[in-house]
Image (cartoon, rainbow over the protein chains, first blue to last red):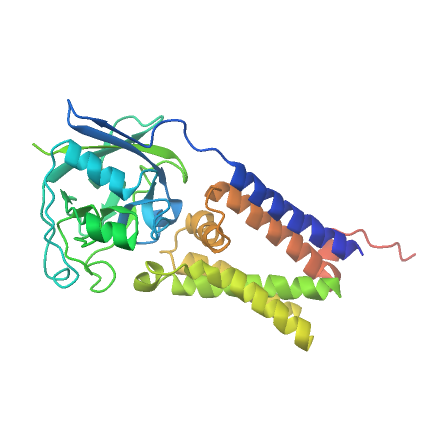
Length: 209
Length: 139
């Protein structure tokens, strides 16, 4: 009898946590804003603590996309809105990546300047500071485009860490497969700089001059 | 009887965690599937196996599974003590789709599960009772 009570208590606690987790509210800030005058996009994301230790090839992915929990940052804006925002600030998409050439081609398109900050951060950090590249190469983000494939596959990928035929923006240092297949590089979040898991961060994206 | 069911659930849970952690090392797979689903799956399978076979889960097996789990967290993630704070919680969160909980909150749940489970399972083994449960006066 006592065992049954204890087991019921455990399941009760787990059920309560599930209910609490379902009822949690998100941020009141808009998920993405575009300032056409300054050519700046700002969007919100959350830190995913898992990838401070586990390697990944996903930088930022929309929370409701298929890869929504596979990235260092979980984006609160979707890939279509992000693509439109980049077009609105005058960025040109490369659209040179295909499923056939992905392992031999590096992403093209306008080079972007990406910074990230959060409440209590001493400054805005560059992607190089918050994401560790095992080869220590500076991350070079280009507007790959790929809207059609992004919409049909619904992966939710905003920033990929190697050249990707699906992600809206990709790191042009590596071709597809560098992380998973050929193990040329490993990317993890920088646990010495990034805030705790689930902390809301703000990305700022603009064209690199 | 309820305790045996509980032992089977906990054994499946720990076994699932071990399997998930090993497969999590395979980045290609990790990027494509939710490996942590193996945790609820393994828990359910072991529970069903127990229900139909009434197989006994020896305390030594449970103890060594817990030991292997604890060691793997350390060994598979660059001997980093921080991995205890991140890896089991992130697996649990993914496996049970508790995506709106932070790792800190999930860690509290895991800690609670481990403390209560170990107390229930090992209570009559002589280990827990010697330390925590007041023994009847023999005199």
